[in-house]
Image (spheres, rainbow, N blue to C red):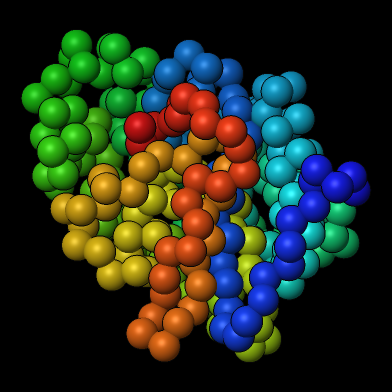
Length: 222
């Protein structure tokens, strides 16, 4: 590992969870809503995953759990190859199911479902395309993260490989934000991550959208 790839290992007491978004897909580039559609990584996405894995391996994770969609499993595999850890997979970490929105570009969604889109961006509870509420995504994803955290040692680090919308809702739930304020958490760029640390009063957001120079966020939740 070169000096430019080195990241200091986490210090201090308490568990940490790194919520890592998958690498780029063709639908990200096309600004097409993926949801639970199983889209592969692009070559750029694979390269992103390899670079990010080198950084995250320096944090010496104790466990990796990933969504079972290919863009997440292939991203997780890059970290597993460097750390020797076995990846666990859980469908509870999938991206938000968005029904009729899935496969549409953002422009098509706004044209066909403009009122629904605007209500969602205002923070109102919306079943996008007839799919899941954001709170329902948190209901299934946050318990997965907590279940794997329970298996860690006192100072252990868990890497969760998931999707932008699911990560946003999980962070919001774990740090105790009201669901109407989850939009305040900016989107994650492909293959970037957020870090939560365990404090005396619960989970705290220590880093958000880490791992890259600023660039456009391309995702379902932007």
